[in-house]
Amino acid sequence: MAAHNALRQRVTWFPARPGRPECPVCRRIEHLVTNCLTKLTARLVEQPDERQSFAAEPELCGPHAYQAREYAGNAEIALIYELLIRAYRSQIASRQSAGIPTLYQHPCVACNTRDEAEKQATSGVADLLCVPDLREQFRQTHGLCLPHLDLVCEVASEEVRQFLRMDECERLDRLAEDLARYVRKRYPVPTQEETTDTERTAAGRAVLKMYGHLGAMKR
Ligand SMILES: [Zn+2]
Ligand SMILES: [Zn+2]
Image 1 (cartoon, protein in one colour):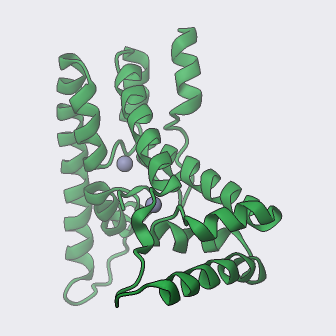
Image 2: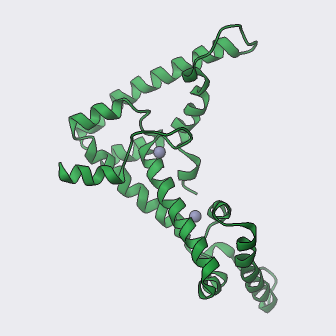
């Protein structure tokens, strides 16, 4: 049980706060990638040497570079990009032939963090679901997104796989019913009928269920 408690600290599915990814794997990825990008931007701002290395080898893919902008002020981003822009300017100037240097030839640190977090969290969830009590608790949540359900099933025992299949079919039935009720009340012409919270959030939950949380997607 001690091992399970240690695991639960890394893979938490309770409680899903509003606005947070509901899938425990998405949530873990989002947490670690945010951490990684926050620390990276702080290092780049505080340490001139790090800025120099980043200018020579920018270790961020495009989507994560955009995300990293959220974790620093405009002046800090300007400080980082001034060096980067100058470095690329001299690389372009020194090229004999036409064409420009490839920006994304360096592995992205945030993508690496994402991939590692996904691997650990999927096997963490597969292990936790071996415990009947935790399985019952899992049933009370919105569960995994479908891309992560697929990955968890790849590493889970046959018993856990069976449980996940049955459990997910029930979840998808409930979600489809929420969607249908909302459509009936609001499309094509809104009726006087009140909608519930569950119905109003169904469309957003359907996108999250099918594709996972945007911050946890593979880039
Ligand atoms: Zn997910
Ligand atoms: Zn990336």
